[in-house]
Every structure is written in structure tokens, then in C-alpha cells.
Length: 123
Image (cartoon, rainbow, N blue to C red; front, side, top):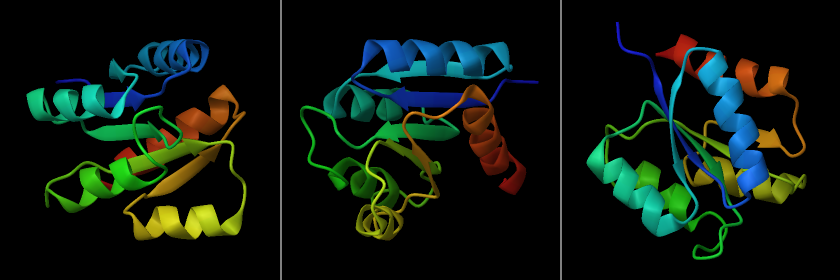
């Protein structure tokens, strides 16, 4: 049985490392991207089962990448947005852009695993 593959799109190396270690310890396969370009290349090379997406990347404006990932391919994986923005407008726009869920930074390892696990239970 193959392990579920999660693409982590995060430009902060400390956060990437924590998310990657947490998911790999829980049995997930992970891939990392720090930019919009790297994320699109990774998705093109091997479609992940889930994408964890920081919406504050240096080469992408807010929710543009989320929209690209979810609206260009009917078989696109679910996207969970990771952000420190806690306002309702950001969340509404995120859902409109195709996000399935939000993780508000800082989040605990338990919150991360629960949020990711719920997405795989839906499948």
C-alpha cells in the first residue's frame, strides 16, 4: 500500500521542517516547495494526494496559487491553507479559491494531523 503524498508549500524552513517531520512520523510521504514555481513543478511531476499551502509566498499573491491548483484540473488534490491571517474575509476568499480547510499559524502538531486526517477520511 502506498503512503498518501502531501505537498508542503511553505517558504519558512522552520515551519516546513516541523510539518514535514510531523507528517512523515505519522506515515505520510512528503514533498517540499518554497515557491509558487516549485509547487507547480512538483504538482506537474507527481500529483500529490493533498497540498498544504502557505498563502504568503514571495512569488505569489495571496490566493492566486490556490485558485490555480484547484481550478485548472478537475482531479486536483484538496488544498489546506496555512496562514497567520485570522480574518473572516481571508477565509471566505480561500474557500472561494478552492481551499478545503484552514490551519491558522501557529498550529499544534495535533491540529495539523487532525486537519490532514480529515481530508483523507473524505476520500
